[in-house]
Length: 408
Image (cartoon, helix red, strand yellow):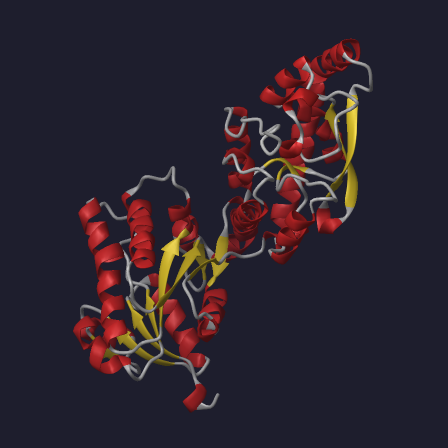
C-alpha cells in the first residue's frame, strides 16, 4: 500500500483485548498508527514496534493522523462504581475527542457495545456507554462514528464467549457454532475492515457490527427447530381454541373464519398469510393502521387485542413462509416500506408473527423507523434474542392495536 495514501490512526486504549488483536491487523494492512494510553511503558511492552504517547500528546501529534479510534473502556465484568465507569467510558472519551479536534483529526470512532442498545439493561457498563453516545452526539467537534459490537471472535474470545478461552481447542471449535447461534458475535477482521473504510464517513453515524447468522448452520437449524416445535405445540395445545374462534367468527358475521391476504415475504416474494378474520367483509384491503376502526367486528376487537387472530399463521410456519420472530410482513402496496427494507437487507429475513419492532410498538405507519428497527434485529438476531422477544410478546409487549391510527 502506498504509504502516502495509507490510513492513519491514533488508537486510544490499545492495551485492551480488542486493541491487542486489532492493532496487528491494521498494521498488516499498511495503516500508520500512534498508540495512546495512560502508561507509555505498558504500551511499549505490548507493542514494541509502534510509536506510543500519552493523551496529553494528542494535539501535537494529531496533525499526522486522520482518525482517532477510542477503544479505552471499563469492561462489563468490572465491579467498579458507576462514577468509575463514567470516568473512562464518557469523560475520557470526550477528552480524547476534544484533544483530537484541537490537533486537526478529521474523524473520531467510539467503540460501544450491543448491551447499550438494550435500554432495559441498567448495568453500569450499559448506562455509561449510552451516556457516552448522548454526550458525543450532543457536543460539537469532529464527526463521530459509534460502532456497537457484540462478543468478539479472534485469537481470544470476549464477552459471553470468554469461557472458550479456558476450553480445549478442539472442543472450542465444536462448541463455537452453537454459541454463536445463541448470541451475536463479530470477528476482529470485520472490525478491522470497517475501520479501514473510515474515510468514507463524513457525518455522525452509528453502526452495528455482527456476523451474519445466515452463514451459521447451527443458527439456521436451531431457529427452524424452534419454529416447528413451537408451531406443533400451539396446534396440539390450542386446536380446541382455534375451532371455537372459527365458529364464533362464522356465527357473528357473514364470511369466512380464516382471512387470507397476500403479503411480502422472504426475498420480496409474495405469499398468502393466514389470520382469523377480525373485520367485516366490506373492510378495505389496506394496512392495519389505515383501516377505520368501524371495520372491526366486536369479536375481532378481542382477537386483535389478545393477538389470538395471529394463531393461523402457525400454518405459514409449517410451510416455511414465516417464523415466530422476524419483521412483520407488509402488503405489496406498501412500496415505501418495501424499498426501505430492501435497502437495509431486511427482505433477506423470513417475516415473523412477532418481532423487535412489534414489542417496541413501532408499526407500519412509520416506514423508515420500522425498517431501521428491522435492520437492528437483522444485526442482533440470535436464538436467545428470539426467545426473549417471544416471551415479551406473551407477557403483553406490543399488544397495542394500531387499527384506525391513520384514519382518524
